Image (cartoon, rainbow, N blue to C red; front, side, top):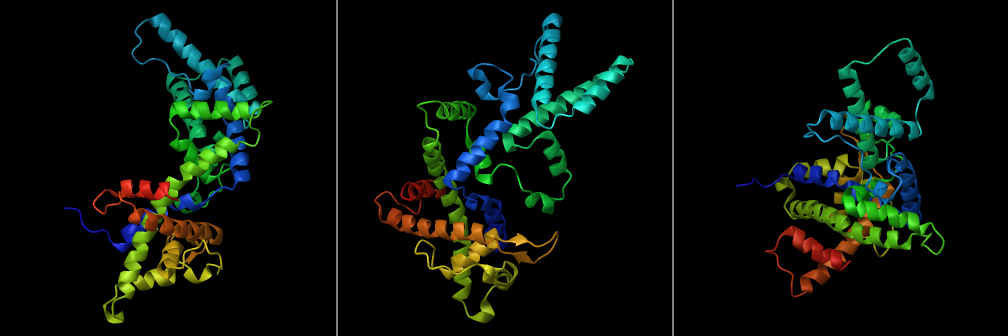
Length: 327
């Protein structure tokens, strides 16, 4: 039997999905997609037809037994990876010249060194597809502490990266092909289809994140309803640690008025001020996005509960899908 999660279990889960509230505007969607699209060019250009949109890096067949075919495939893999490195914006020409000079002097890499370079380049290409980081940026990112990584300013927005991770291989290929065609004459240069699709996709992520915030807010309400001497001491930690007082006041009708939700949002979106510190500081824009999303979530949930298909016995995922459809 699963134990009831503690409040800090709920907080940890909610904080893992707080990036859902880093919401792109329509112009940011276009700008970030364009930048991501441009950064993926070294992979897409490995094939000069539409199959390049699948962003595949050639890998030899591990079950091949014909020696001649094995050599051919390894040669093709090497050429593919060299081409990828040549087209990557941070390609080091000086390093290439240095390696060529060493080769001229008879210096050769060992099999293990070649395999390590091949593996590293594959990793760079796969990483570029995942988070848009160039190899030099990836080395810098990987050298950071966990705290610094959490504050790392990715060149591509969190929402664009989340959207890319959500796409299947086939959908991603169609997405980038449609994007290219949108830039052509009689296409959709403003990418309105992309923006509409992203908005629909975003709803499911926001609802799931808001449901986690609601769990925290419900726990807070339960504690506040108790006499002070019976309240869980963790409530004091939530109230003092996560910079609730730093959130800006607003008169927007879209923002939730539920005070426990404001504290839950502060808990979810605040960031540590330094590595290992218990003190946090507010992220006002992310918090306001969350408060607005939660306000819409509350209204959609009320409509969902009134519908004939709502049931508390169905899974949270099913209920969230219904709420999402009513946002």
